[in-house]
Length: 284
Ligand code: AMP
Image: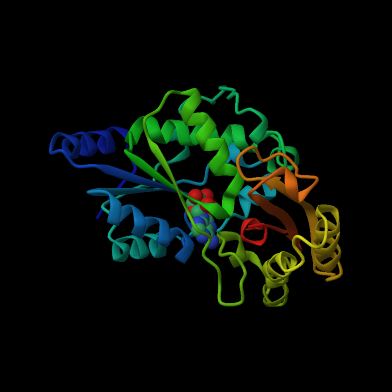
């Protein structure tokens, strides 16, 4: 496995791979890797001749300075995990390398970017589109792998790929969870032991809420989830919405969609956690 920080060097290596007719898969990450990331890398290794993983904490997608400053960084451990998973190239550039000039591009990401995370993290998705478009331009992957934990991000990336007429196939991968149900996240490292013990209530409540569908209406399910989680003093719901999987627009009635997804953001102390769950199998 090669660890590369220069765009030029990576381009040269990948152009040689391409000349040898190798297919290239790509997993973008911000590091502090866990089994959720590694599940994407393993799938990428399986489905492509060459697997490239990037590690870059992208400043333009952070709307909260404190979150950026405290974002966990574990580069040695990341490289060890990636090597074991069969990754071929790690791309770990500096901020200067990725942004020699400030990126002033504004992306038109449409209605999928204007709800939920788009409302609560202004500028976040534009920053995601800036970095992912740069990485796609450098790597030119045949396939790129994204986790469904960041459910809205996948929809936004698909819009960006269309807007830029890119040929990369976007592959979405299921959420990996800890044994207690908590969605794996680099930010879980920032939880105190007490917070870590309480945070699984988020996933537990989402799962429990599926058992009330379709008997309870959409608003009743939303109220149940928000109230149950907010009853735990350590947790504070920022938003919970039930949306159509494709449009990401709110659903008012189970009959409006065949594929409703509940999306949540919760503060556990200072740490912001997100998760989601499908209600599809309860409606068929
Ligand atoms: P991040 O490093 O948080 O930017 O995440 C990099 C990629 O890993 C994104 O596509 C995430 O959706 C994905 N990812 C993060 N956590 C998980 C998880 N628990 N299960 C599956 N994929 C994940």
